[in-house]
Image (cartoon, rainbow, N blue to C red; front, top):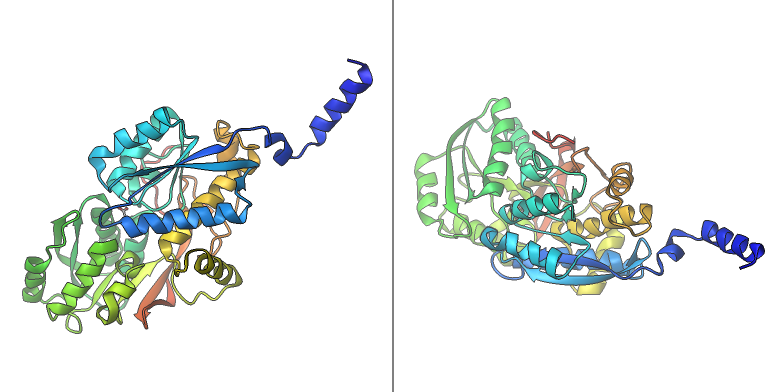
Length: 387
Ligand code: BEZ
């Protein structure tokens, strides 16, 4: 080859955009490990919809690579989680795992992701450990830690003057951690927790515990339930005659994506969450319009988290020219970026968890209307994270 030709090829390579350099790369395989069945099935669908919407808005490519999906129904079953993620990584050779909803399943995923060095983006599960002791350069969360909405609601309830509260939730990591976050703030504000009540996950047999609450007559109740369980709990609370007598509060999952099914039984409930209705920002309005057009559905918090998981992946891939193995560069790019979320722009903490406003919402006309800020720019304490 003549010297002139070599110079031209070298110059073309220097000038080439990340997009054109990546054009020769195969599709990026995204493993979607989400629940398609069980009490969290609708949450999994919303996350997948949100993720795909963002990818579609980028012309089906992130960092210049087209996206191919491999899906597994994790059934929100922690006992199957290690096998499921290993299949995605070892059999299907995915480049990145996106999942999941259930904290117990997500912790098993994070262990495998950390051990194998696989890129993982958690689009919901709040397990504190994922951005605590299990934090890692290759693990990111687009959602929240269980501590965050709980802590925000604890502050609000103490400020409202409630003194004696009962908590009720499912007996698993998300429920326990949500209640811990709540209790930390509520006690700081001068409140007392009379009793922590639990049912096994995913049981919806609430009757005996509702009878116990009625007998104890606390000032208020704090709860964490989500998906199908949240629908049943809110209906049962009203049917037991407690609504209107003992105020019910919760982490916002209690009323997110559930209001059609809960109907009037949810009216007036106040919850704390990083998303809600009535933000009325150009960013959120555009997202809602696009989501409604694509899926003939209104988005909820889970859809936003899926959308933002894809945004995080896009930022990292743009910086690494589509190469997920460049983990430090990927993390550095994500770490210094503002994620342009429909919830409001946010940055990730050093432990890779969103630092974000927790909105106070109240249910009215089947919407979680934002009525204030429960906690501004709330960052998870990331206890135990060494990174
Ligand atoms: C969790 O298990 O972390 C979770 C499940 C549903 C909604 C929110 C959190």
